[in-house]
Length: 134
Figure 1 (cartoon, one colour):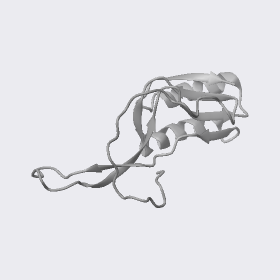
Figure 2 (cartoon, helix red, strand yellow):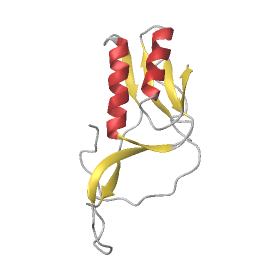
Figure 3 (cartoon, rainbow, N blue to C red):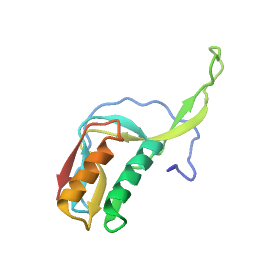
Protein backbone atom coordinates (compact mmCIF):
# COMPACT_ATOMS: atom_id res chain seq x y z
CA UNK A 1 0.00 0.00 0.00
CA UNK A 2 1.06 3.55 -0.64
CA UNK A 3 1.59 5.78 2.38
CA UNK A 4 3.94 8.60 3.35
CA UNK A 5 7.27 7.66 4.92
CA UNK A 6 6.94 10.42 7.50
CA UNK A 7 4.57 13.29 8.10
CA UNK A 8 4.89 16.59 9.93
CA UNK A 9 1.67 15.87 11.86
CA UNK A 10 0.29 12.42 12.60
CA UNK A 11 -3.40 13.35 12.30
CA UNK A 12 -5.15 15.73 9.92
CA UNK A 13 -8.34 17.79 9.81
CA UNK A 14 -11.16 16.70 7.52
CA UNK A 15 -10.87 19.77 5.20
CA UNK A 16 -13.66 21.17 3.07
CA UNK A 17 -14.38 19.55 -0.25
CA UNK A 18 -15.27 21.26 -3.49
CA UNK A 19 -13.79 23.04 -6.46
CA UNK A 20 -12.13 21.74 -9.57
CA UNK A 21 -8.53 20.70 -10.07
CA UNK A 22 -6.09 23.44 -11.01
CA UNK A 23 -3.09 21.13 -11.41
CA UNK A 24 -2.56 17.65 -12.90
CA UNK A 25 -5.30 18.36 -15.45
CA UNK A 26 -3.41 17.31 -18.62
CA UNK A 27 -1.81 14.09 -19.78
CA UNK A 28 1.87 14.96 -19.24
CA UNK A 29 3.89 11.74 -19.25
CA UNK A 30 2.06 9.06 -21.22
CA UNK A 31 -0.24 8.92 -24.24
CA UNK A 32 -3.49 7.95 -22.49
CA UNK A 33 -4.86 8.93 -19.10
CA UNK A 34 -7.72 8.36 -16.68
CA UNK A 35 -9.34 11.66 -15.65
CA UNK A 36 -11.74 12.09 -12.73
CA UNK A 37 -15.04 13.85 -13.44
CA UNK A 38 -16.28 13.86 -9.83
CA UNK A 39 -14.60 14.46 -6.47
CA UNK A 40 -13.81 11.89 -3.80
CA UNK A 41 -11.21 10.58 -1.40
CA UNK A 42 -9.39 7.61 -2.95
CA UNK A 43 -7.79 5.20 -0.49
CA UNK A 44 -4.42 3.55 -1.01
CA UNK A 45 -6.18 0.18 -1.40
CA UNK A 46 -8.29 1.50 -4.27
CA UNK A 47 -5.21 2.95 -5.98
CA UNK A 48 -3.46 -0.41 -5.62
CA UNK A 49 -6.46 -2.30 -7.06
CA UNK A 50 -6.52 0.00 -10.10
CA UNK A 51 -2.74 -0.35 -10.53
CA UNK A 52 -3.03 -4.14 -10.55
CA UNK A 53 -5.68 -4.04 -13.27
CA UNK A 54 -3.55 -1.73 -15.43
CA UNK A 55 -0.37 -3.81 -15.10
CA UNK A 56 -2.25 -7.01 -15.94
CA UNK A 57 -3.73 -5.49 -19.10
CA UNK A 58 -0.38 -4.18 -20.30
CA UNK A 59 1.31 -7.54 -19.60
CA UNK A 60 4.23 -5.50 -18.19
CA UNK A 61 5.04 -4.06 -21.66
CA UNK A 62 3.89 -0.44 -21.47
CA UNK A 63 4.78 2.23 -18.95
CA UNK A 64 2.41 3.32 -16.19
CA UNK A 65 2.40 6.53 -14.14
CA UNK A 66 0.36 6.95 -10.95
CA UNK A 67 -0.17 10.71 -10.60
CA UNK A 68 -1.97 10.68 -7.22
CA UNK A 69 -0.52 9.82 -3.82
CA UNK A 70 -2.42 9.10 -0.58
CA UNK A 71 -0.92 11.58 1.87
CA UNK A 72 -3.98 12.45 4.00
CA UNK A 73 -4.43 10.31 7.14
CA UNK A 74 -7.97 9.21 8.07
CA UNK A 75 -8.62 8.30 11.70
CA UNK A 76 -11.12 5.83 13.09
CA UNK A 77 -12.46 4.85 16.50
CA UNK A 78 -13.23 1.34 17.62
CA UNK A 79 -16.84 0.29 18.05
CA UNK A 80 -18.85 1.37 21.10
CA UNK A 81 -16.55 4.26 22.00
CA UNK A 82 -18.07 6.93 24.21
CA UNK A 83 -18.07 10.59 23.25
CA UNK A 84 -15.16 12.61 24.60
CA UNK A 85 -12.65 9.84 24.05
CA UNK A 86 -10.49 11.96 21.78
CA UNK A 87 -9.56 11.50 18.15
CA UNK A 88 -9.02 7.93 16.99
CA UNK A 89 -5.84 6.37 15.66
CA UNK A 90 -4.81 6.68 12.00
CA UNK A 91 -6.61 3.92 10.08
CA UNK A 92 -5.63 4.51 6.44
CA UNK A 93 -4.44 7.15 3.99
CA UNK A 94 -6.35 8.80 1.13
CA UNK A 95 -5.61 10.97 -1.89
CA UNK A 96 -7.95 13.92 -2.40
CA UNK A 97 -9.14 13.88 -6.02
CA UNK A 98 -11.04 16.80 -7.55
CA UNK A 99 -12.86 16.88 -10.89
CA UNK A 100 -10.38 17.21 -13.75
CA UNK A 101 -7.47 15.41 -12.08
CA UNK A 102 -5.55 12.94 -14.26
CA UNK A 103 -4.94 9.99 -11.92
CA UNK A 104 -3.22 7.38 -14.12
CA UNK A 105 -1.27 7.60 -17.38
CA UNK A 106 -0.11 4.89 -19.79
CA UNK A 107 2.21 4.66 -22.76
CA UNK A 108 3.69 2.02 -25.02
CA UNK A 109 0.56 -0.04 -25.71
CA UNK A 110 -2.17 -0.08 -28.35
CA UNK A 111 -4.97 2.48 -28.03
CA UNK A 112 -7.78 -0.11 -27.83
CA UNK A 113 -5.96 -2.07 -25.10
CA UNK A 114 -5.24 1.14 -23.18
CA UNK A 115 -8.90 2.22 -23.36
CA UNK A 116 -10.08 -1.19 -22.14
CA UNK A 117 -7.52 -1.23 -19.31
CA UNK A 118 -8.35 2.29 -18.12
CA UNK A 119 -12.10 1.60 -18.18
CA UNK A 120 -11.55 -1.55 -16.11
CA UNK A 121 -9.39 0.40 -13.65
CA UNK A 122 -12.11 3.06 -13.39
CA UNK A 123 -14.51 0.40 -12.07
CA UNK A 124 -12.22 -0.03 -9.04
CA UNK A 125 -12.38 3.67 -8.11
CA UNK A 126 -15.15 5.60 -6.29
CA UNK A 127 -15.06 8.48 -8.80
CA UNK A 128 -16.62 8.77 -12.24
CA UNK A 129 -13.86 8.81 -14.83
CA UNK A 130 -13.21 9.31 -18.51
CA UNK A 131 -10.35 8.15 -20.70
CA UNK A 132 -8.35 11.00 -22.25
CA UNK A 133 -5.47 11.04 -24.69
CA UNK A 134 -2.71 13.52 -25.39
